[in-house]
Length: 101
Ligand SMILES: [Ca+2]
Ligand SMILES: [Ca+2]
Image (cartoon, rainbow, N blue to C red; front, top):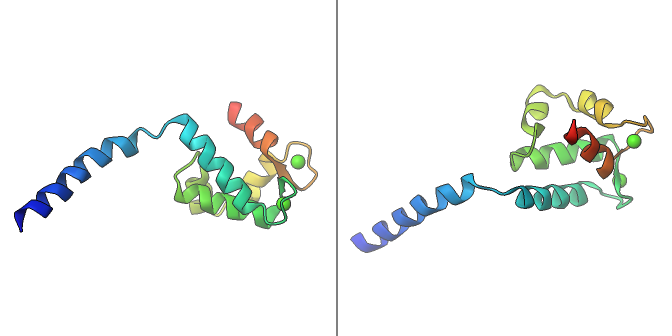
């Protein structure tokens, strides 16, 4: 029964560097998936409760500063910063603009 243990061990070794090198493209598509998942009414913008959902999903995937926002419970602060035109919704382009800063 030694062989299966060896096999799974080598899978572990090779899987770790692959995970560490999540490319920007992967992160972008993860983010897009999370955004669409959080956007419950599919209007392409996030209300506060939807935004909270996005942060929770992004924190799970370790994207950007989501895990910090989640840990601090700073959803409203983050929302206020991202909502550049203060219409009470956060859009993908508002998030993209903030990410460039
Ligand atoms: Ca929405
Ligand atoms: Ca807005």
